[in-house]
Image (cartoon, rainbow, N blue to C red; front, side, top):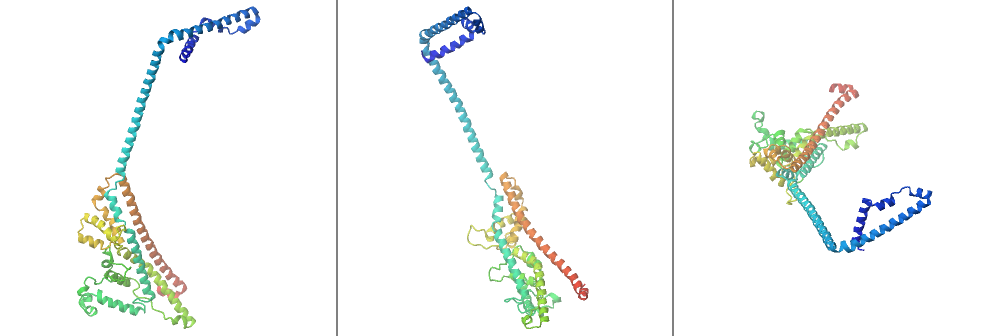
Length: 436
């Protein structure tokens, strides 16, 4: 018997069970047959005979069914049924293939759409605008200029200290007399104005103003010497003395430590009596205390001059940002504001200082309408500009914080001077009363 015949036979058998054949129903319909058979032996034998007959009937029916299925039904329908099964299988495969094709197309289209969206996002987010490039190119030499500003501040502070304590190689090394003589000579040579004192300064100046017109009174004029310039020709890393350096140093000598401390002879510390030695030592400490207080006051002046000193020079290496190289980008911003080329050169100087660069970054760049027009840009570029402006704002806040620290130092010195006055009144009522 073939597998196909067996399968069909099983199907028909289940159909017969479902229809409930009379003999099958009779054979299996008795639920209490065991109890009845146990009570009457005749009945039990009769029932066993009926079961045997039913079983034989089933076997005969199945044999007849198998014979009919194999010899009558199957031969003429076997090939058509096989062709039908093959056709249905092929049709189902083609249907599954069509569904797979649709799924592949769906996946392919989704991947292409994702790639195209990523390409669009990359073109949108990774193309920096001109505005962000402007910020990037104008800040690359800012750190070097700041470092040179700190160097200039340190040199000015050291020079003032050497001048007051009488170190060698300074005009005040031998005392206030030599210091005044050197400053008067410089005044007559560079800063003297014959029109002062009702035109009676001719004898003091020794000659008409002539070439001194540009430098007249710059040793006492903070505005003309420091405040009116964004970049000063000051570079203490070389040995050449420029006009701006001489003017700044002369102004510092007039503003701070106009009268240098008196020099104390070395013998006063070694060959004198104990009382005189103690007096000399007290005088020395008082002088150094005064110099320390002056250094706090002068530090603000030195810091401002340092911020306006020359920035970093051109090193010849294009990969290193220098103030000379950055100037061309700062120039574009100022020219867009309507500045003439000569005014731009005067504003920035040859090597833009830290002060000049910060002036453009924190003020001038926001005065041009193009800056606000460029804010109509891609969201990523707007975020980049926001971060760049926050960084510039932090640098400006740091400079402001340092200014606050200098102000607090000055206030603390003023408070200490007031306390010293009252302390003198307590320690020495007579002298303290006179001071009050």
